[in-house]
Amino acid sequence: MNAVTDFFALLIPAMVPFVLAAQGTVLSGRAGLFNVSQEGLMVLGASVGFLVSWQVGSNTVGLLAALAIGGLFGLVFAYTTTMLRLDQFVIGLALYFAALGLASLLYRAVVGVTLEPPLIPTLKDYPIPLLSDVPLLGRALFSHDLVVYLTFLLSFVIWWFMYRTSAGMRFRAVGENPKSADSVGIPVLRTRMWAGVVGAALMTVAGAYLPMVYTGTFTEGMVAGRGWLVIALAFLGGWRPHLVVAGAAFFAGMEVLALQAQVTGVGIPHQFVLMLPYVGTLVVMIFAFRWARQPAFLGLNYDRESRLSG
Image (cartoon, rainbow, N blue to C red):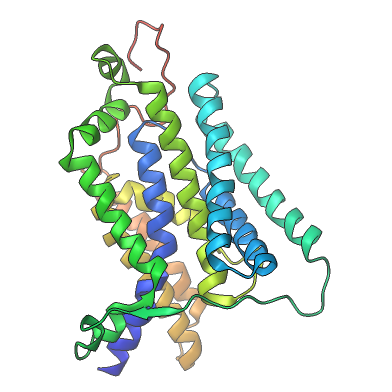
């Protein structure tokens, strides 16, 4: 039973980068914006979050800095696609490469070339009273850092907003039929703008979490394809916040199994286990293609003067 406890203790924090970046993708997508720069933004968030934390001595400030740089990139993405109506896929790829380059440039400019990389303290765990004392899974589920708790709380808030409020219904209408939404007074352009900014900000915070909980330092390859998996996760979850959390558990579980396979030295190469999420994504997409639904206006730019709705 200790093995089960240890598995869940590793699974919960491993879900956080997937959940945060996926919820950012869902928020943007529900407004019709298809951002494909997740991988680059997560790397940039990891770099900025680490560097600011190292310089200032506060992980909280590092997370806020990552949030700010993500919001800035999101503003560029939202403005160029919403106001200038440039191709969303092309702009997303451009921002992906720009974020990768900026992440590397900032690290080299601040840290330089060193024999030993600088380190920051990892996030401190805050066990929830009473719940963390529950036998077997109490420690695994309720003894984590504050970002873990905020991530799952945020997921609930996003779900509640989208499906239990009139504002959420209007928000989803923007990604389904912006022409109709505009005709009843819903501010389509403004909605797409804030969704793009908040979505990208969540992606960079997802990246900033990695050095603060795993390594205590920044390396360029630490995101390790999670950003690309997040895009698949949004599709697999049908662009629904609660299903995205469930899908994140699958991807994070495969990641934890690969780590445990490497540590325990079992006969299965950990690279094979790391490959499973991608294979699983392909298989699930094949069978789920018929029922997996995406916002009707996803990836399309809205022109208010156009006679067509899409």
